[in-house]
Image (cartoon, rainbow, N blue to C red; front, side):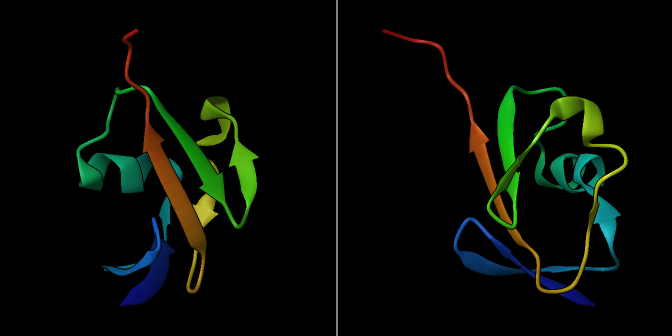
Length: 67
């Protein structure tokens, strides 16, 4: 098991995954989100190749339209 910090809480993964894999497992696949990994913003084009490993700090913010 891999433990990460996800949106301020502890989250366990079966193994290291890409950001795309994490978003899919969380139900955010194809939805507009902003992802920060270890306090650095990650571009959506990099989601498939950026890996999340033990102890990573991940913030996922869902974007919503409105006014």
